Length: 288
Image (tube, rainbow, N blue to C red; front, side):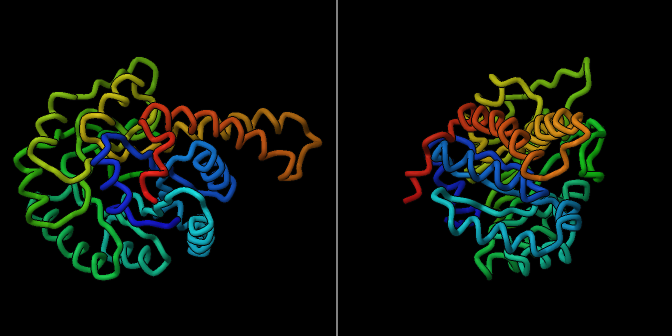
């Protein structure tokens, strides 16, 4: 069942769980995510970054839309980190049901103005909008080249004002995560007290970017405290391509049906764990 983000996260917000948003650049990764989602009876967000869309071509979104319609669980197709009106318009035309406009590196006023404009355009065609306030850090291993190396934490009162002035459907907040897999010696710590303050000030669903490589107990706690969408990219790509490299040690294996099935299964183990961790497993029935 194809849905937009507003519909998907309203249920998660009401029932205190989070839906994982898996970055999906290929058909094989898409297949693994959907198989795992249906097996776990879990709603899922499939997100495609503009750079991933450039690689996969717009027809990939057409395939995602078709698969989402056939799925036995709710599926949202989301553009991750769109940075301009042009990218958002491309996403809408391709068939995304949700978009993110990331103007977090701009001033508060510029962020408000651009987000408000995107909301006006997207809401007119029932496409939901995510925005970001504060700055998510980067480990220098992620595709989002606009990220800062430093975290600028989200101010709760600014967040409340931002939501009121823009009409955005969900808000990505900065509480201590970074994009990418953390290098050895880098130990992130989520500011859960700050999350509590933000959630008291902002009633719409909140989003956590940089959801890979964080402590399970912190991610689980965040998903019960107001975070309703958690972005996960590196944590599923890493097992997929590690297994791929392992399989390709055999110089005689070259057919896709011999290479990819074990890679998909390795990735699905992580996906099942994320569903359990975020409280998403078994929640598909809440949407019907």
